Length: 454
Image (cartoon, rainbow, N blue to C red):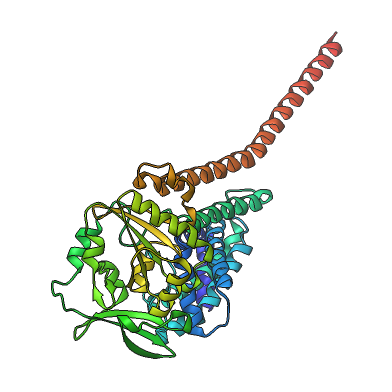
């Protein structure tokens, strides 16, 4: 300990503390910003991941509470990251960040030991880490944050203390706006397979086995035990079952991360794979995705039926995909009087393809043209449109994100200029006043000297 104090004292004399502090601000702030941003971009993904946490820990919370947590964690991480980066709240921000990491350490250790959840979801789908890598990362974060906490107050921030709350407020509004777009429309950046503009047909051809008689088995975990199910007997995830992997019957297992890389999307009709029949036809196909059919709002029946009518009018196919059991599908058919086929697919695949419950994916000749949540589509325009493809393209995620980021960065820059311009202007005015006083005093002295000489 004494040797460590001597080293730190030496660093302080040679100015190394300042360099290390500024490097840690950039490193830790940047990582918190990245972690919060990728979560804010995809609140549905965070919701699904936190639901897995809740089920693994057997915590009795509602879906609404989990959704609030998904929004809150993303926004808090982003705001904390910005404050760490620019040096706002030089003591409070490191304390809150260290508290956050401290709370995550026992949780990530539990996940690393038990593997109750396949991956932590710390960086969303942008960067998937193993549970042990996540736990190691959090230990390193805790050590670096503690160092920053010790010395951060010695060095100034970009912004003056009076506007630190404005920095936090602007960052909060930006993260919230990104999250709301991601929840009600689609993620403004898509880190998952099957992005807009990509061909589902070519990927499906690569991923679909050549054999017609291949059967898939699905492995789920609950209470520390793994059980294998067929496509006709998939368990309800609301009962605590967590998807682990999918594999061919008699073949090797394919972990979720590798499934995403290979993009092995499979669609079944009463246990028979119909992936090619659904995804590969030429023309227009609308996929109606129900990741959680039982909890679909009853008010969705009207827009879904309007969508089915419009698809028929415009010579497009409408196909619904769900992971629900046959009883739930029968219930939906009863209340909605569905005139479209409803096929079965793996829950994780449906959630990977698009976000929302329900969501709509529009394919033209096997290429994804747009993805939307059903609630974000204006079904009242269906009677007056000529092209279903153009109907769903009134929302551009890339342009929206670019605008939000531009407004946010310009606001931060304007705040910095206003905040730092006033002290600079006051300093310049003070120097000018001192110069004028000095000149006036000199003039008076010269006048007195002249009178004395006379």
